[in-house]
Image (tube, rainbow, N blue to C red; front, top):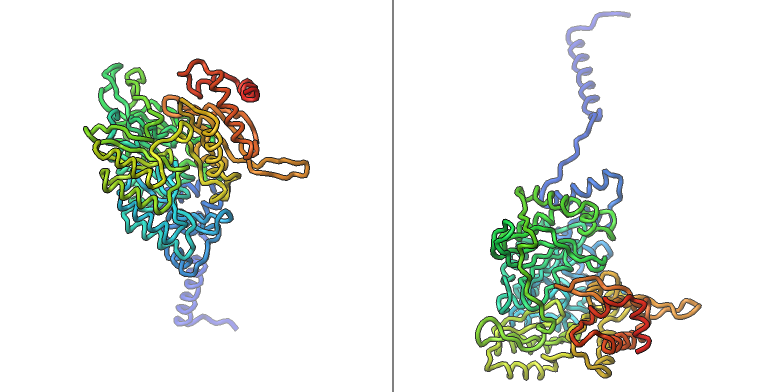
Length: 584
């Protein structure tokens, strides 16, 4: 039966059909979904991760962990883990390094805490406070690092947060001292007190330090990043081993250059990958350094490799692009051109003194001195820390200056108190004098406290020093650096003699012992160069004998008493050095 719909029926049907069409339209996918644009302080990092993924490359786990939960957003979980006395899983072990906490199992079933101390300078009461923290929450000692910094070890999981917060109570901090962040900023150890310095680096280091602390977008880089300022003082800062180095220079009014104090910009240092920072032709005024460093880091944030941790340092972007392309990107970030100055217009830099970090030396302030204290491979007990703090308070200006040579300096010691200061150091069981070898003896934590190390570097370093000092008298400085693994925390490639940990096979059955590969001829400052391999995989027990034989060969065959160890090794090929050592 057919029949026309009534007006009410027609209106109902029209409404029903219209509703169905609206539902179908809402359910239909759009032709081109629009991706959310990253915003906030982590936006640049997210864009870089997305670009890598869009190119068909797989992000490394660390990038995924940062993306899943930013470490600074996870502090409540860190506190919860501490209350539970729980150690972290790998992803949280990575995250907690943003707070300066490193879970170092299996070497030690505990945390290590690393600080940030700009230019390596802290007050006597801060050092005394760190002694209290080390004794109450750690193993009762601290290590001075090769970034003029402090680490304390053997921290129980329930004490982890207490340490972070106690450090902050002292006016210090540990934020960003590990993982994919800009590490402790180094500067001249005698900044502001050195008679020959061109510039006091303390304000520059402080400015960069606080710039980083107050900008979350500078955390979460593709990999770690190092920056150093060298003011031209007597003690080398090793800025050429950093990603960014600023070298104070005096520019003469020649070749169109504006005369005065400038900082030469050097880029790309990473000694573990056998590279030193190279001059760029760019120079900055002191007030420009922070902005230039910021722009350099931001280019690295955008273009550093987030898919291969072995290639995730700035050196590899520089290798792929060349310096000029990288600097052009920096200029784009800055919004202005960088200043180029011909090297012919730059005056020679003041020479470094390889012994100036040990012993008594006059300051630029009349009647005052700095006293360099030798620490056995950088270790201080809590009692020694308290004693040094009291010494600085009572006989110096109250400051303690840590150095990249794993020792410390007490500044502002009046002439009339110098002997008392020396005696006070000796009363602590420490020394203000050191042999030519011990003054330049540097060692990383080693297998005692680091899971990456293949050898017990600190113990082996002291054994080598004992062996050599009992048999030889060196009349020139010789630096010996021991690193436990390829990460090169003790920068073995810039030592006169460098040892890098290796497992050595000693039987047909595959039995292994601790040992080292030995390199020679490295250097720094005006003699900067990467050492060459001399012996491969030497058992640790044989290393002291190898070092002795090499030093004897040097003493017997050097070209006059003024020839340095580095110069001696550079004028002989490795095979010739081996023959001389074997014959010594």
